[in-house]
Length: 395
Image 1 (cartoon, rainbow, N blue to C red):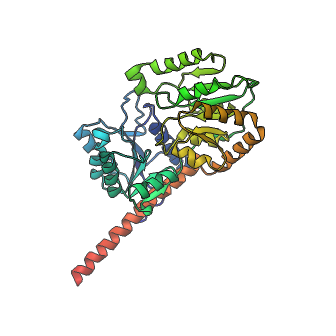
Image 2 (cartoon, rainbow, N blue to C red):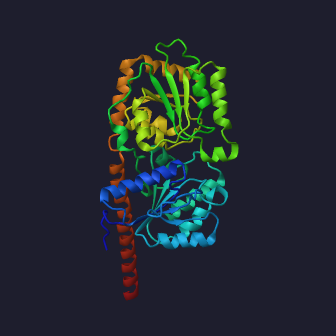
Image 3 (cartoon, rainbow, N blue to C red):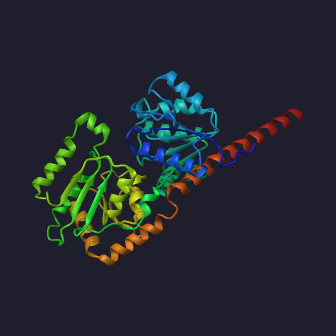
């Protein structure tokens, strides 16, 4: 029987607030967008695989999974099989076992149509990581990625047929779409997100040491709390090292830190107040960046290192990319964008054009249609299989 897109029920597997991470924020936003489009949260629930047990939202979380517990995994599968469809958000680090291989046991126990959203698609995976993705691809009805780069990696690197892959961009809150609020006497360059090694912030700070002649002097704000896992293992040592580097370079009047985890309203206002967004990430593997999507949605010129998602999105003149770990190149890019008003305006216009169709209500509709389509596709395959059995019996 055909399941209307507006009524298809979806069980999500993901981290979820109060866990602080990109997957949790993504899933909360996606679920909220689908519910907003429908006018109800009915038929939507989350199996939470996060490690934060504080104040779990029992209106949304239908099962709190205990990593590595077979009984909990069995209960999770039973709950998920009560939905029309399942959406698994995948990162290697959120499930139990080496490279999170527990996800394969969960996948094997799910009987309803399932889409797996890959938030990471490694260009050079280990043999074990490759085996996990191969098995997920074999078992899932569809794989979802958020960039064309991710799709290309799956087809060329993993040999997955393009018909098994759907590209749905990372969504952005409509709050980011308002007019620019940049109005300070000094231009504001902004980096935000959870703080920890791998964000390339040392290179960004060193870049501003090359810009002491700019007038008016820019402000560089690093906004965001330390990543919970970093804080658990090393406290605030990393942030303190950045503060000490700032002082050593004599940049206390340029570089600022805001260690709050900002709500979406406050964050959107901050991003809209920036003149430029700077993403100096060290990773060469990142095929999805929610921060990048939000920056572009806000119509901000972006300066980023050449991680895959940035290369894909910024080649259409919405920003500038630079080599990894190169403070001089970053400084040159910041100087160019801050001093060339025409180029900065052009990048902002291009960013807004690029983000058309990225806001969460649209992404929610696309995702709902995808899930409903899987139900129809599975039903069609089952019907063809049943007909073959009838013909074989009659033959």
